[in-house]
Image (cartoon, rainbow over all chains, first blue to last red; front, side):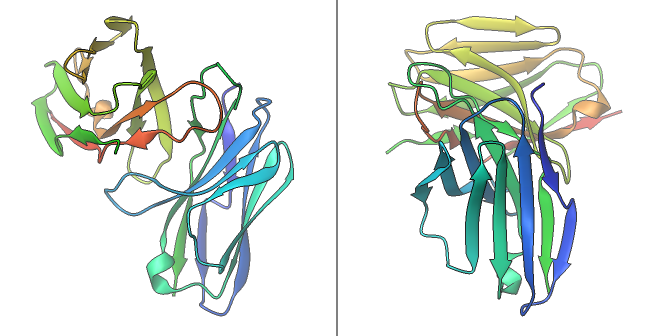
Length: 115
Length: 112
């Protein structure tokens, strides 16, 4: 099973709303990632969790708040977003095993629209 | 720094072969990846090749790696309209939370 699931598939929110994106994997992977992708661009890394600890934060604004409740789940909490934050948000996971392949497997993404 | 370059567009006729090219600059790359992204969907890992290999074949897909020139290609035989998508090349290293570097993606358009 190489599946990463994400919910919701689509999300429309106002600039004053609070919402959360969810990601789940059951491959035993210990690294999980959030990416933001604008149309016709490659994914841009936002956050990396390794063994449930935040290891990389790519200078993302504080209106995005990640959370890793356990090794299978990754959340992205959203608050006071701007219209320019509208994008496809992708979750990925990888084994994070020293010396081994660290191939990333991506979820289908959440299409976020901020009004 | 690391960089991955791809041409932005490729147009082919259905039934022909497609060849998508990629160049990278990091000579210590261990793995080279090809991802496919259909409109509105996430990235699907198509295949990857270790840097000590020259070629990898998987059904209609053939990956060629020229490590000396840091050139990677993806050949799709008998291209179908369902192959229309954006194809991302990425390079990475083994171990840890190393973040792959993605190219800008090549839009493959398949005409009937």
